[in-house]
Structures are given as structure tokens and as C-alpha cells.
Length: 326
Ligand SMILES: [Zn+2]
Image (cartoon, rainbow, N blue to C red; front, top):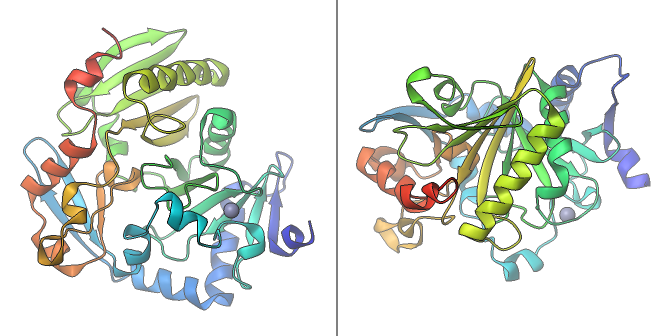
């Protein structure tokens, strides 16, 4: 416990004097002051170039972010993961790194290689695999405690989590991911079901499968989400859970979950050699329409056709989606 006490910048619980977003702002300010890696990371992000790419029926933004090379290119196979020291375990955190202890079970940490001007990794204080099923309630409560400033996201162990062996969520400023405004546009929304007050919507013409779940009662939303993941696992199984990326936000009085069912993690172009290699490794943020390219050549060259092909390759197709509600 000593290690955890040393690593606790502040503690958040429901009776805290300051809301969670305020504590995270203080943490971010502190970490940029005392931790050179974080200072450099956030300073570099100010100069990151962004380029819009208009695909046929949707748009995405590319972010040229060389600092993400390690994360985007990370080896996430079981052997490589076993062979490294877990960077989310409390005892392995760099000396300067501290976090906000959340509900006595998670530590919210500044991501030192950010995609957003405020980017947090919320890691469980114990080393345990990245599996969502037992933690839906935490996800919803976290989204609520972080609202309205932040959106929470989850990368499945086989879908972009750089620590697939250590349970964690991430948080980004609300509205910073293009799918967030898309998910509330009437023209995109096709209502497929309402189960126990939870509305399920499929988003149209986005080049990849996106399900939206909206509900005001946490326990009902959890039940519907659980059933949905169980069904997905029977249709296209992943290792411990179906391959997913997920965004969750709370806008009083309801939660909105944006779920990306995935067929595979990395597109074939990721594994090509030399000039043909495209270093895009889609996770929640990329599936959400903000695509990180750590290599300048990719940032310059990637076009609408490539984006559409990558989404098609890594996402569930229409035939598979139809099996959810035959
Ligand atoms: Zn760990």
C-alpha cells in the first residue's frame, strides 16, 4: 500500500470537495510541471498537425503525432506482453508520475504521450486482464463523475489496448472525437430496438459499424450491454470478450454508449514492409474518426480510399451485424 500512497496525488470519492474533472486538471498541471516526459508530450501536441479527409459519406480527421510511435507500433502479442514490465502497475510507474485515486480501486494517470490536450489513463490498482464484463458499473459511474467535461473510452485487449493485461479506461475531453457529434445527428440514427427503456441505435453511412445505446437507468443499461456482448461473443468470438472499442458519456439524465464491433485489430497494411507499411493501429479514438498517424509519410499519403478500406477491414460487416437482431 505504501507504493499506492506515494503515487496518490489526490483522492476522489462521492463526498470530495472538488469534482473529479477539477482534480484531474490539478493533476495535469502538476505533472506537466514535475515530469519532463509529460511536459514534452503536451507541448508537442500543441504543434501536432491535423488534416481532414472527406470520405464518401463521412469525414475523419488525421492527427500527425510522432510521439505515438511507441504506442501505435507496440507489440501486443502474449509473448511480448509477458516479457515487459507492466507500465500501468503502481510499482512500475516513473518516479514523477502520480494519479488521482478513484473509488479506492482505480488510479487516474496523465497519459504522457497524449492524443488530447487532457488525456488520462484510469488504471485499476491491481494487475488484472483487460476484460470489461465485471466493470460496467464502474464504467458508467466514471462517465458520470467525469461529466460533462470528459468522455470515457475502453479499448478491448485485442483492439488497441496497449496494456491488454492490465484493466484500464481512458478519458478525453468531451466532444473531441468526431463520432460524438455524429451519434446525435437524426440523419445518422436508425433505431433498431428498445429493451427495458434502453434505446439501441445503429449509425448509418459511417463506413464502419457503430451501435449506440442510450438509457437513464444504470442497472438496465448494464443488463442490455451484458446481453449484447454475450450475443456478439457467440456470433464472432474474441479471446475473453468480443473485439470491441467503446465510448461512454453521461449527459444528464442519460448515458450514451458508442460501441464499435471489430473483426480484427490491425489492417493488413500495418504489417507490410518498407514504404508499403501504413502505421495505423485503430483503437477507440481512431474508430471514432480521429486517426492517429505517427509517421509523416502516412499523414501525407493516407486518403479517403485507404480510410474506407481500413474501416471495412477491421469492422463488423453488414451481414454480421444483421445476426445481432435477425
Ligand atoms: Zn499491471
